Length: 81
Image 1 (cartoon, rainbow, N blue to C red):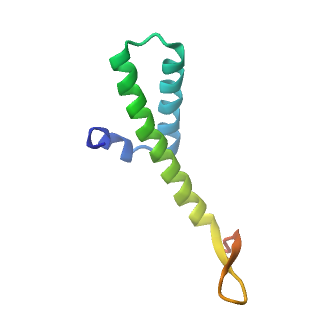
Image 2: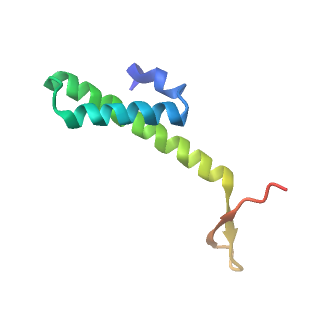
């Protein structure tokens, strides 16, 4: 994945836009096989990046709610006040 170092610097929106472009190109079936494989690999890297960004955002807005016995009882919105 070192060939995709530029992805790490992308915002969620930039990565998602490029991923959508790749999906449309792959769905069209017009690209040669080798190019399709390269696009698929980049798309997989973009998807992983988007998932990581979403996960990080979710952690920023949720907190773990701990039950009386010390077990995780779920999540609740974070209180930043």
